[in-house]
Length: 262
Image (cartoon, rainbow, N blue to C red; front, side):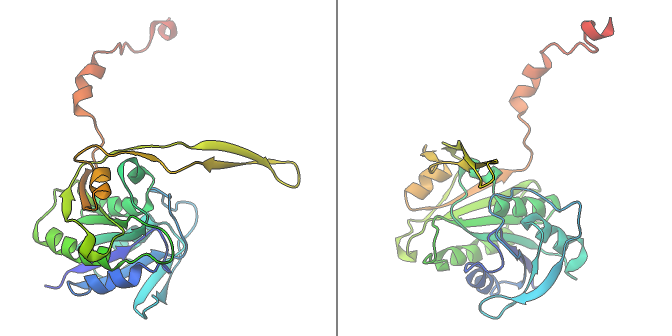
């Protein structure tokens, strides 16, 4: 039976990455594109709660039928799963994101969050990013790998709480040095608070800074990308730290506290 593949992203429906990704995946199954109407980079796992979400038909730059919504990347997946699509997706592919999602980046990423939402609906899900920005990014290598990735995921069942986070170097296909299965690395952010005044004398703030410093330890996604390899990182949705449970149980948990109990 032909699998149904949901494609979404956080860069928006006008992203140059969507047509090559949809074309590559259409060789495997029936591709359904639902993407935000604008860029939601850094949106994380946000959802729309206090207003309706609108979704209307559009076409990608190559003429492929798609839908765009004024909701978040997570909303795109929720729309598909909750019945906007008349078929249930067999696979969620989020991407191709412009700019890598490595290490701690995934906690901010709307791309990875869309894959998480698929996982919460018990659908195998992957997020894929390419390590470059700008108008001249070649998405063909990442799209080709997305096809290989999708075949693997559909053929080999993922555990129910695991998604795959993939990063592809911004290199020509022949220069990519293979695939590494990795763990998340550590990104050291250097963000700053910059205060300025508007023409009315009211303060406003920029939050940000220079590019994060990468601690490219062996075996991490950061190291793989630095070596020109595609990183494939299994990410577990359960954020519990099992090794700390017993330690935290040993803390003082008398309740109510004496100063309150009187």
